[in-house]
Length: 461
Picture (cartoon, rainbow, N blue to C red):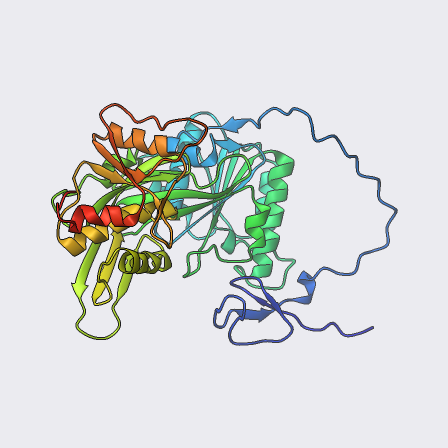
C-alpha cells in the first residue's frame, strides 16, 4: 500500500499545498500553514449498494414561506429578513469587543422571556463571566440555559435531548472534536465542528447562531466553506471609538442581502437606532467647507450620511490620499476626473476623506457627494446646508443614474432638506421622477456643472 503523501492546509483561508511554506500564496498570511492530520482526510469510497434514483419535480409550483421566529430586536430581525428561521444556521462575525456576544445575549434573553427555550454555549467565557454581563445588560433573570464547554461530543449529546428553539455557540473557533487530531481553531476542526452543529440544527429543528472570529483583514477566520454551509452570514461593523455599530447581512438564503441594522453602544448594552439618518447627521455643522450630505441606500433602507473632505498643501513629493469609510481606488479615480475634466488643481494637495459616523459606503452613488465635498474644500465655500447629493460619476465626467432615487428623496424630505442634487433624468417610458413636496430637484448632467456651483463666476451653491 502506498504511503499517503502529506498535505498542508492554511488555517486562515483553507488553501491546500503539497509542502510546508512560511507564507500562504493564496491569502498572504505568515506561519498559517500546518500539516493536515491523516484522520481528517476523506478516505476512498467504500463499496456499497447502488444508489436510488433522485426524484425530480417541476420548477413551477408553490411553497409556503418558511416560518420565522422574531428575536424581539427589530434591527436584528430586519437584517435576518423578519426573524430566525427554524432549522437554519447563522454565522455572526466581527472584530473583538465590537459587541457580538452582547447582541446575541440580549436577543437570547428576549426570546427566552417570550417562552422559548434558549441555550447559550460559550467556549471563551465562564458561567460567572456571562452572568456578570447579563447583570450589566439587565437580563440576569432571563430563563436562558448556560454552558461553558468546548467538547463537541458533549454539546451534541445535550442538544439531542433538548427541545431548544435557539442555540448560540460562542464561538465556533473554540469547538473541539476529539476524533480529529488537531487543535481547536484549525481549519479541520472548524469545518468538522460547523458541519456537526449544522447537521444537528437541521435534524432537531432549532435555529443555530455561530459566532466567528475575524482576521486582521476583517474576514471571518477559518475555511470559507463554513460561510457556504450556513444559511446567513452577518458582519458586525464599527469602530470601538464610535458608539455606532452596524450589523450587515452579506448572505441570506431567506431574505435580502446588504440590509443593515444600526445600534448604539451604551452602558446598558446595544440600543436600537430607528432613525439612523438623524443620528449620523446630529453633529453636522452646515457652515463648514468640505462637507456634503449623501443620500445613500443600505439594502432597502435609505440613510443620509455626512461626507467630509479636507485638502492640505503638499509642497513636494507624492500627495497623500487618505480615506476612511470609502474605497480608496474610487477616490483616486474621482480626483483624476475632477482634475482632467473639470480643471481643478489637486495634484499638489493632500486629500483626506471621511464618512462621518463609522459607516462604510460601498455604492458608487456616493461619487457626487464626494465630488461636492472636494469642490467645496477647494473653493473654501460651504455646500448649501439643505442640499443632499447622490449620483455616479463616469470617467468622462458624466453623472449617471442610480437605483431607488425616490426612496432617497423621501428620506431627505423627511429630515427637512429642501434641495436634492442628482443625475439628470432621461426619458424612460414617460415616467417622471416623483419628488416629495417642498423638495427642489437640481439635476446635474456633467461634473463640471457641479464644480461651477463652487468655483464659477456666480459662486452659488
